[in-house]
Amino acid sequence: MPPSNIRLKKTGVTALRNEAVDRIIEMAKPDAAILWLYLERLNGVFDLTSAGVLLQMDQSRIEDALSTLKDAGIIDGPIHFSDKVPDYTAEELANNRKDPIFSELCMALESALGRILKKSELLTLLDIYKRLSLSCGTILMLIQYLGKTPEKRLTMKELEREACRWADAGITTEEKAEEHLKTLIKKRLDMNEVMKIMKLFDRLPSPSEEKYINAWLSMGFTPDIIEIAYDKTVLNTGGLTWKYLNKILEIWHSKNIHTLSDIEREEQKTKRNNYKKYEIPASAEADEESLNRVKNYLRERKGGS
Picture (cartoon, rainbow, N blue to C red):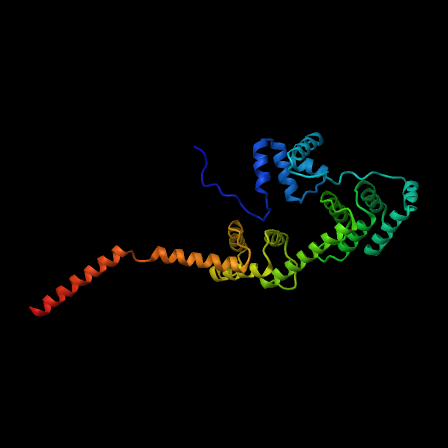
């Protein structure tokens, strides 16, 4: 007998595009499907070695799966991942530091870290500079952003990971980087606002909380709308229940309810439906009237006897 009533445990939120899900199902390629889930979970950037170990695939299988996803139009452009960084001799590194552009990047990174770069850090920065199609100004903006982001400590691993994300997203020029940073900064401010709304002051969100909030903001909800859903959650559950709050917003999103006027319109519709549901039918009213006449007749008869 096949199993029934199976429920999936939820530990966070990863939004999946329905169109991509349909294509994955149609392709019936297990390697491509599991790699796509892995990419979605890590926002499109992954370490080849770690992916191979976790997914139990060798490099050729991963490359074939990537090609399948690209051919199907599920992923765009090149997929940049951090593999083993090429090694350079001390003389080669010294020669690269004479490059005015790379030298500027080194000084900016040393200023952000507050110390001289180690050889491994020089190698990683040089790999970013040579391998990814990011302009010098774009890399400088990325270094400055990560150096001032409270929720992300500036490390070479984070710099490399974020640089790969930018390269995959086509954020390769100063103009595109500026627009992207505006979006990121607004998202950070919105996240802080949501934390305040939920009375979670003076701390950063946990990884799971951050995933929930990012998912809500990605759905198009503003902090004031999330506050309405939070208020409903507290009224119905007695406190902050993340899953309950997430369910409200998921339902609203599925009904394309994203603004205050959308919510008011939906609530009016619900009230009308409830009124119709509990409205006494005409036949029931007639039956009740007949019953009252019988009661009055019996009362009068009893009084007359």
